Image 1 (spheres, rainbow over the protein chains, first blue to last red):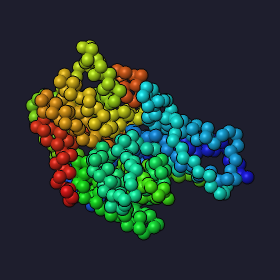
Image 2: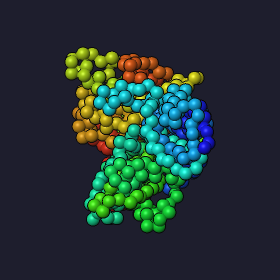
Image 3: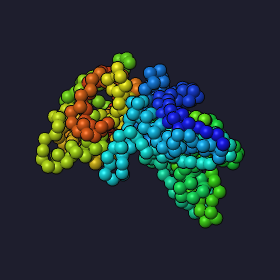
Length: 280
Length: 187
């Protein structure tokens, strides 16, 4: 067994929260610059210019890229040989979020219950998806997920007859309906298969993939590119003000499913494509 | 920032609003007010009860934002726009009382667009997710009402050269629809 200190986990999550909210992956700055070059609309270019400038300010000054510093979403892979010393794993993850959002001057966007809506004050609880894996490592994938793009996400359970074309049309329609609301240029995460909840988790997890990285299965890789092409014909453009760059990429993840089902979930990610991973 | 921008200062008159057309790039200097979901709900409840609002709304601009907390040495934290459609149900009564401008992101509903024509108002798009850039243009912050709402409290901001784009004008123009149809390559 390998022991990992409770305090180390707290500190790691705190830093993940602060860094993920201020600094994008290095490749994202390049992706946005390419989008600026590619965009045909002058208004779209103006929007992308401001986004690029913004993201540089955020990185230099270590302030949040966007005031919506999100729900703290984590995919956590716990090695079977890991033991947390000095406390419980879940408590450490919560405490890390609490410290990151309070000490890091991040916005607290969580309410205690969805109808009475009183703020929890420290952005807890996070939403955590645990997995048990072989080995002695603890992997924490952290993504602050903003409300604007999350609100435009949709899940639907199709009959298998809908097939490839049915899914393609559905995803493109979801993006079309969302328009400027999810802060395009967006990344479209698509989860296909599993069941009702699994499809949504797959869609969310797909957003961790790097821009331009294709699904290892050529069948799904091709579908990703086809959807991306269709989405960029919609004319929505940066912030929905018209243009040729609506999405930066489409990522699909799939899972086996029931003979009667074809679940599909579309999780939309805004241009502030924030995520950060730590392995302890 | 160059001369291609129109410059305005609230409170806005009908004449200023009349000069703004969709696609115009605008720099705002002066005082604007923040309000988002919960503050809008409270404002409209006051209107329904016939009670006065916590600030004089005539000619003013409301910015849909819930800023991040300020780091030491900063006036305000990251402060970009939130999605506007959520404020749609509360907007027409505010326009009726003289609200002249709104800053947010994303398209507006039919009722709001009609009320903007009727009461001569304008809707500006600020770049969503550009909260760090936009915060630099905010020079002072004062809480006016509903401090209990935290990021959703109503704040009076002094802004300098705050960059926005006219997305809906008082003539019924809609940049979202026009822009999308111009660049659309599918049915």
